[in-house]
Length: 115
Image (tube, rainbow, N blue to C red):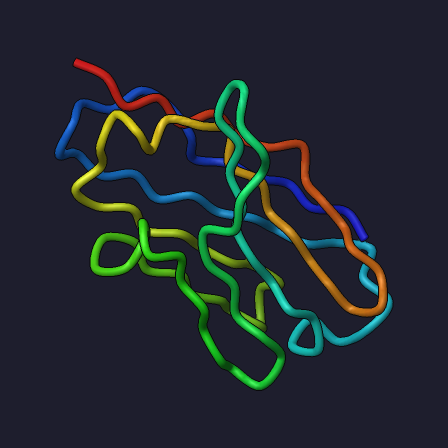
C-alpha cells in the first residue's frame, strides 16, 4: 500500500488547512481499511489525531475534537483532514495511516502554525 499526503504548509494561528491522502497499490477494497491521521512534533511520540474504521466509526483525539474533521471518499481511495482554528501546538508532521492486518504509513506532510 502506498500513501501520499498533501496539503501541509504554513498557516497563521486561527487559520485552516485541508490535508489529503491518496492510497494506491491496495490489496483490499479501500473501504475495508481503517484510515487515520497521526502527527508527530519534535521530541514527542507520534500520536493519533483521528481515524475512521471500516465500519465508519470515527475516533478523534481530544485535541482535535471540535476543530478537525476527517472524511473519506472510498471512490477516490482518499481521506481528508479539515483543520480549523489551528493553534501553534498543532505544528507537527502529519502522517496518513492505513490499517488492515498490517500498518502502512505515508511519508508525512509538515504543518506549521505560526504568526
